[in-house]
Length: 383
Image 1: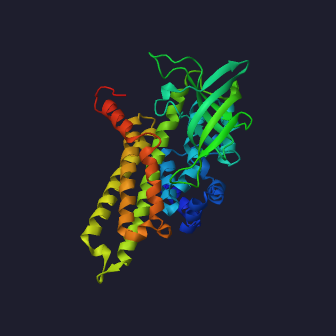
Image 2: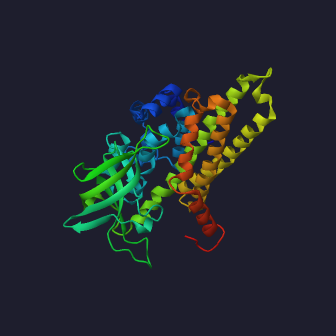
Image 3: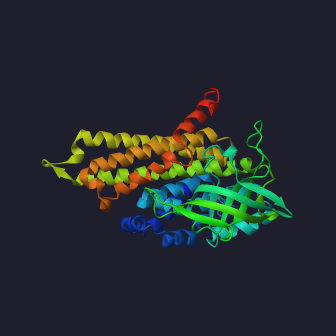
């Protein structure tokens, strides 16, 4: 582990130690956003970990950002803690890469300081994973655009001040399906954006939402990149997102594994700790090995991204491997605890509910496997 990465992990771990299991249990039970936790990370400068130094960021890469997010999840905060800051870590990447200097100076410092919060408004009810079929329209109007449409599964929109919105600025073309999409960094004006929360099985502390956008006006200065280049811009947020989600999944799995190993050492049945039984040892050892393997792919993908090299296959593979390894680790942790694994006070049931997130979002397992089959193995495109 590099010195910078190690310093990030140690610094974040010290902050996380101030927020114990009871804090996260309460946040989950009451669906309370962890404001104190986010403020602590913000005050320490961690929201700008991957942002350019000239706007107040640390100028580090996906490697350090992944290490940070993994440390948060590993602390026991899980996806509730990681998701609370996740959007402000990866979502601004398209602005940092494609924004003008004026846009970077205007938009990024408030995110780093916690004065603004952002969310990613891409997915739509009728399009799902088929980004090319996005229907939200941005119609040219004078020196700007008027946006109307719907978005779904927009995380953290309840507290966001702005959203990175992908909208169609020219009609869908079957020959060039991903052209005609444009990226905007738009204000979430209440008069023109209705936000409805989606209640879900896990990660209750961080909201997921439907957005109903009607006549939202944005200026040319709030368009990121050229008109029609929205998907190209989006890619600079999607690969880091997969890497960070994967890192968080590994962290969550390790948190569950740590709980399970501690319980297996302490719980005595028939005169011996249950951890002495191979029926307990082997599933835990397997989970450990799978998490370690996934972790290597996470940081391989991060290293490629930081080097400016293609990393789509690796980022998606990392997300797939980490999600599956985390789910198995969390399920194993529940089973090792037996009946108490179903009790909230032991936390592993919360981890298991949260472990569903990386298996589903931001892209399904099946689509990842289809993508890898095409890009890594040269098989015909199936979607």
